[in-house]
Image (tube, rainbow, N blue to C red; front, side, top):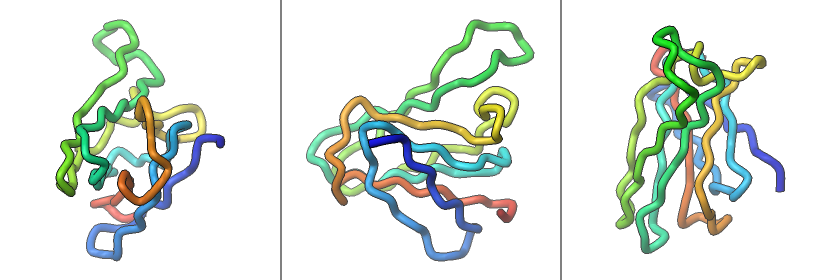
Length: 115
């Protein structure tokens, strides 16, 4: 299965949940996107945000990881800087090491600045 593009919805609209797949996801990132993860897999899951470009401070490319705890807790990650996290088409990318491919691990993206 190839990487899947996520639908970004505006804050206040109904969230569009997508089952997380092992090949990851991308989403159009205007720098105001919040990534939500709904995890009911029975274990914590590590989500990786794939850095695309070296930042202004010249550190080496470093992916950022966040843990989405189990127990149905929905985690929210802050908006990502477009220079570091977007590819040449304006999309940010997220992955997990293993995804069940079902509704026990879902992801959604919400823009707090409007799509």
